[in-house]
Length: 462
RNA sequence: UGCCCGGUAGCUCAGUGGCAGAGCAGGUGACUGUUAAUCACUUGGUCGCUGGUUCGAUCCCAGCCCGGGCAGCCA
Image 1: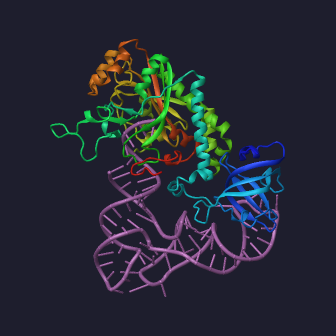
Image 2: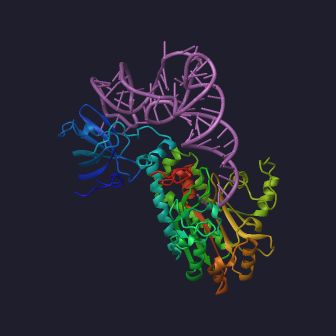
Image 3: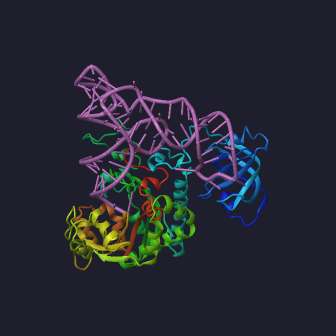
């Protein structure tokens, strides 16, 4: 007999004389003449209720050994439930324990803290919360591809190992095969990286953007979706050392088109989650963040706000708020400022654009005022920056000036500069933090709880 | 990395300078178309680690480790 997923059994439109279910026991309640077993297989949030009659063979030795956490195979009949709380239930005709779980099984019927579950990351996907989180994660990954593929964006795999050390070496993870204690040395005693695997220092990527630009300047519209690594010693609920990032890049596109795509993208994902992860989202709304559904729907219904950095500074200074960090034009906006804009002033996602040139990297396109660049950040309530992007500097001479300003060696970026030398085009793109998007969609407050196995400073378990 | 808070039973937490507590989970029994079932009884402890103060420290002090919140870096 073929296995039926719990999801499909619960969605059945007619009873069935024979059904095969496989999964894990969530809870069992014994009555005198029979036993109720809640079976969950992760295919959906809910489990299905199995009724095992005490007359079944080996009732005492199998069914009554089916403790929370045990894996089981049940054959039976799918029938309308006599009890409240579920439409269908399964009356078992045979019941088999595949793997027992004893009393030390850490997951209980009651709720656990996120912190405790994080310590048992090998078992937490079996909990309601994390099952839901990772189903949504899977769906969102699919929706991301769907969004771009529908728009004829080409999926590009940018490298995970990179040898350009020009992006700020302190924040990169080094990749090396050199001997820990006795690396080859130069005559002056420094390590001879020419002898390393790649013949030079190598790192894990912090962004696929520069390589993405190469492909956009050939295939027009591209996106990347892959792991990204930052060695910053960040200890917050929204930073991880390893995370996934989506980076679209569009040729013949300016900052306006870039912002429009970003806003459309975020809305698309929220709408997709609302439509395809309804039960899981309702669960989050009930147990994680009561305001979740209201907020998501609010975001869907309204156009995102846009405001220039200059306007944002004015808003902040006219707000009458006492800032812990006072701001004036030219300063980086702090968390408290970004939060105020998204959560209090606009009360919706807001895209801030045209930042001071001095605050931003060399590749962003300089505006005609000479003081600002075509950068944009999309800020969302509760999380802050979820997207950072820009129009790229496509003018060869301006780019070279910028590189000089940032003390970058043009030779290290010869291929990047070449894109401006041969058939240059205005182009733009952004990076969306996948986990931050998941935090927004699920209401889960810690990035460690929307990634299967979090890597943060001091922690790389599992 | 900085500031703040915390670490006591498997889990969530209370507590005290002088015999270590509750609820839940687990075990036993009863009861029940139950559904975080209910009722009775019951097992369970290196009070994060190391040192100090003290007649005596889980409690006070110091250092360290771990977790959380906030900030910076950013996505």
